[in-house]
Image (cartoon, rainbow, N blue to C red; front, side, top):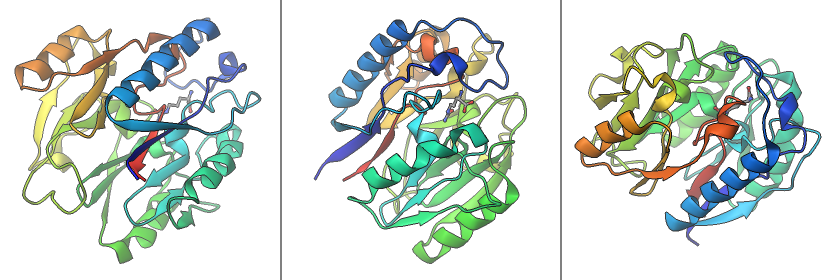
Length: 266
Ligand code: CIR
């Protein structure tokens, strides 16, 4: 089987989404759905089979499937999201993933959002945020140690998730090759301290675009919001030409491009 991208339709109730750092502004649900469709098209163009998990219209944030699972080659870890309002999202994602991987779970009192987990090779950097607590991070470490993954906790200040502030845009593609091909990371150093990422090549977002550090790497492609043109130019200058998608409507719900899919080899 090839590369799979799990996605979920934008809920009717998205206007009641969780918000942490943004003020509530009206969300045009039809426009959010149209942009989501373009996002799915970009995933297909990047070689993914797009698999939809069932819509959950009473769960406002259900489109952000990334937060429900961390999928590695060996195992899928079903999370326990930090926002209590989001916990009912995980079962349908677990059911979809059970076809592909053995499942493990983060359990009470642990919390973990997939948006806090950045995997580079066999290292998982995990944001310490109001969504992902020390117990959840310790549970993840214990679940993954037998598979040879290191879990490194990283402080995050000023943004929702670790991957709001840093994501991978180049370098090691598959677990196991990190040592020979270090990652290239896109980072907002105002929100995430670059120190834990010494050894990787870092590209900083344009200071006028603080939200631009969230890019989605799919194979060799990088899916990136079209509204962050200055940072896109920085990527292009480094030889990384992103596939641009409109993403500003779900941006009002504090969602970025990584949040809307769980990508893995099927
Ligand atoms: C939330 O606050 O949970 C949603 N409104 C946004 C989640 C975005 N997910 C992500 O960055 N992985």
